[in-house]
Image (cartoon, rainbow, N blue to C red; front, side, top):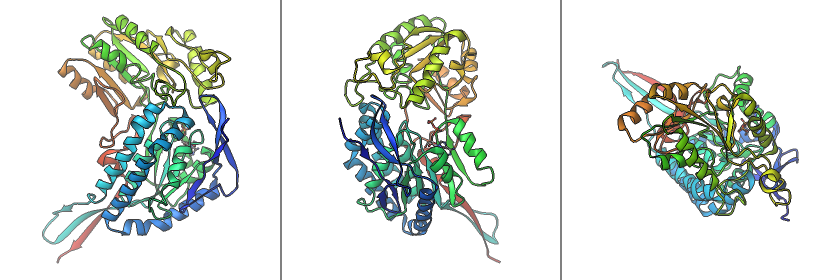
Amino acid sequence: MDSVRDFPQTVDGRSGPAASGEWIDSRDPATGTVWARIPRSDAADVDAAVRAATAAQPAWWGQPALVRAAHLRSVAAAVDAHRDDLARIETRDNGRVLTETAGGDLPACVQMFHFFAGAADKIGGDTVQVGPASVNLTLREPHGVVGVVIPWNAPLSLMSAKVGAALAAGNTVVVKAAEQAACSVLHWATLLADAGLPPGVVNVVAGFGEEAGDALVRDRRVGRLTFTGSTDTARVIQARGADLIRPAHFELGGKSANLVFADADLDAAAVGVSTAAVFTGGAGQTCVAGSRILAHVDVVDELVERVRAVAADVVLGDPADSSTTMGPLVSAEQLERVRRYVDGAPAEGATRVFGGRCGGSAVFGVDSPWAGGYWVEPTLFRVTDQSAPICREEVFGPVAVVLPFTDDDEAVALANASTYGLAAGVWTTDLRRAHRMVRDLDAGSVWVNAYRRIHWALPFGGFGDSGFGKDSGWESVLENTRIKTAWIDLS
Ligand code: ADP
């Protein structure tokens, strides 16, 4: 049995426990046992962190952009040097398989800091020719302190996208990591002093959402808020901050549709709608999970059989093992939530095609080392309409529904019949259909003959209940600035 490891918070360049000295247990979701402790940061810690970020910001913004860029490249180098350790901590903490964290997220985090380093000296305003008697300029300046609230499903990569963009634009940050899986981001913050980052530029606290999170989003010194999490929490934050007039970015949930047309390459589509979309290494706990599979009536039966075959090859087990393709859910609460959807679906008119076992002992047997973990096997339901909660609400697990359509118009109508608008997938070999779908689907990202492709150079974010604003890409840098207009009279 490993000893329980403590991960400190980092405030003003110093790493240590919360001011209260209290800790929160962090469980290994594969086994359900406590493996680490994170600080129970509260309002006092957030106050110190925001104070430090506020004090550090003028000097951070006041230096040449290339110096900021050099700092961001040092952060990239530190992430690169510790990538294996960081990936293993994240996988242990949230259960997402190491092949995804080490193989995908960590290399991407390194590149993100390089991308934003490259952006730092390219931010600028315009000159506007109003007339001969004045010079008119726009200048882009930072918001000041950016509050960064992140969830547990991909902490390092979500943090890197938000923090990289904020720092490049001259802001300093206070990051609130999620109580379910904060360890990787807390550990990352301890590397920053050695990387030469000035104290206070990046502060990372943990703690509960209603304590540390609430204190951060209610702090008037925070000039911009960027949040990734659930739509329900975003509503709470908006309501709690009704008296605060400030820019915010919300990247929220989804109920994304993955459309398979009769002309699709069905082998590629079967993978694209299953292991690429919802039976993922993080067990479908991704905001872009393709949880609604819409298939043309002529191919739906064949597709279901191929998806069944792909799902049969999904390997659940030690998330750090390279042969494992799907990890557990993050917590007992998440397991109970998914179990409710799975157990309730038949009464709502859904027919189970495969899967449905929830809980470590149900999936592996009571004697397995994973019996106490939060496991759910890949699960597919067939439905005839989208009225059941499992078709409308975000399940956040390896659970999908499949529904037939008869023509393109119906496919678009079904896909868009959601309050969310985060992402969509399209499987077709017809170029015109592909472009029509990109045009007509009400989603912030549309993938054609691909799914869940996210890149630091591409803006990412949703519409409707999926939020507004963008992570990544040049847009995310611009959103981290505010525009000042100057009128210089020449008369
Ligand atoms: P999920 O459903 O993915 O767990 P949440 O929206 O609950 O997502 O959490 C995302 C982040 O928001 C976490 O860091 C969590 O601590 C934080 N959070 C939760 N509730 C609040 C709140 N009332 N105010 C601020 N932050 C919160």
